[in-house]
Length: 201
Image 1 (cartoon, rainbow, N blue to C red):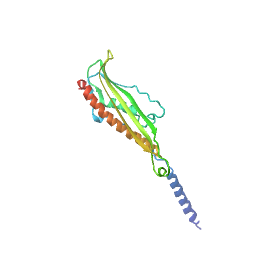
Image 2: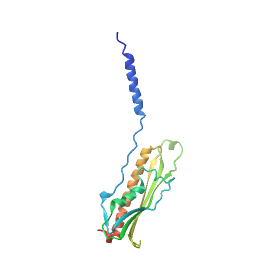
Image 3: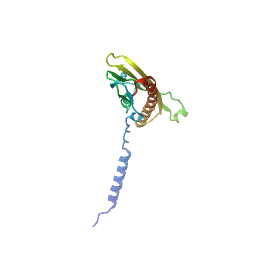
């Protein structure tokens, strides 16, 4: 005698339903952001013995500053510009010092409308502001005197809607960093060609 098949089909259906519920509760993977690089833009070969990378900017590590929360660090991104675009090709006893002066990203809560109409709209919730600044100094290694220098600063902002997921917020931070770095790259390139031209090789 064979056992009835109905319970088996019921168990299989229940298993499929359980698997479906499990799949619906899985958390999507966190986005992975590549480093923002600049070597593809070309290298400035300077008549110096070496290139030094420094930073005088110290992140406060508290709000409204959030650069310590950004997946791709603004400080490290500015430093990478120096390592990607500056190269030593010249005299001994001199150095090009690339200094990160500022790399601050801040968060500001935006004022929202109230009332019935406002409750039916998805308003902008936060604004993120990024300010980047760096200096290039050509120094005599013996005396420490600065023989030539140039600097550039760039800033930008981006707002996000209320209720936005963390992954989408991080994508906004990354896009803002790319945007401001592109502006700063163009400005610093102009400054190098204007003020450091006699030292380019």
